Length: 172
Image (cartoon, rainbow, N blue to C red; front, top):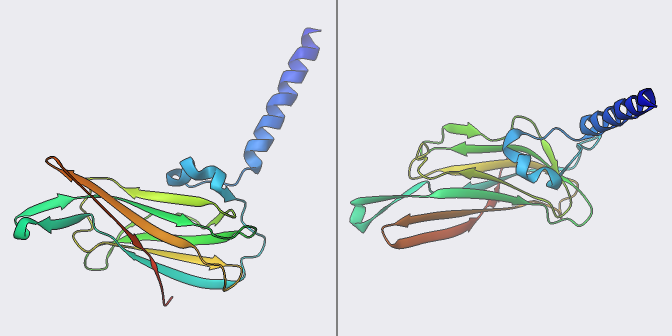
């Protein structure tokens, strides 16, 4: 009886690890959004695009005498009800256009209606006053492209500040 129970435990453990191995690899930063990702399609064909999102890790206030630092959340949404979008790159640049951080180490497939986010926490001001994100993607058709938006939040004293921007498709 004991050996039968041990055999069942080993089989169950083997099945659990097989299921874990079948799951799509998720970049560490996107772990909270693992359910929004799916395995990469066998063929990544379609329309390639790039979305540019200007963001601000800081702004100058009070006539340029005070700097207000922001946290930035970049969200990438797949508006398709039935087709994935492959996100190939999410890069964060500084005021001079230099790469500050690459947020993906490999492409990921965003499920239909799925959303992923990356965050630059306050007071990370490495990118300066004129930061931006560049998102490269491949969509199955020209009528489907990701919706890219950024929300910036801060507080200074008793004042709270927030604003949002929509990314814009640009030449790739």
